Image 1: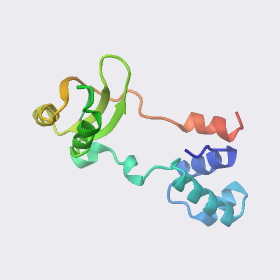
Image 2: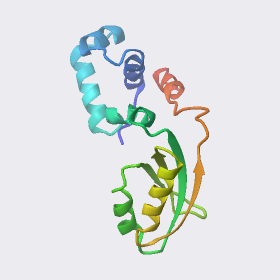
Image 3: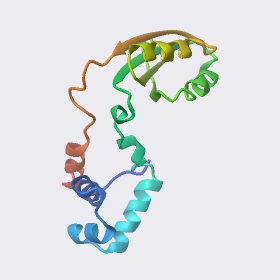
Image 4: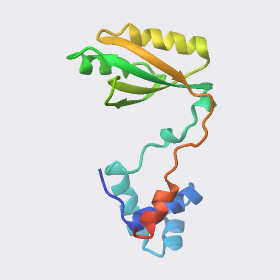
Length: 157
């Protein structure tokens, strides 16, 4: 993973303020050469620091109004095969390997509770999946935020 420096952080904050800013506009805003901005954007993308634009899409705009977090237990030795099958379910939008009682924590989107039930049953049909524990998000009280961390990085902290 590419590590951001202060200029990278300033560049990302400028893009937050104006996502459609041109390379030229960004270079003027930041007071650096246009080639520097282009090189930085390329490095951020290739280094994995900048994620695809699809990560910015709100699932509700696609009709998925329900978000749930599913803890999933997997039989030992079945992890890779189970993960391959879980990745085939489009409503599973995030998977994390965890410590504790569950092996995986999944973020799942669904159209409604009936749709969530269908998705959960798909998970349980996967060989190696032992059990699930589902929590439905009632509302997002604080969305993912990185702006304050970027500001700190931009200031060299």
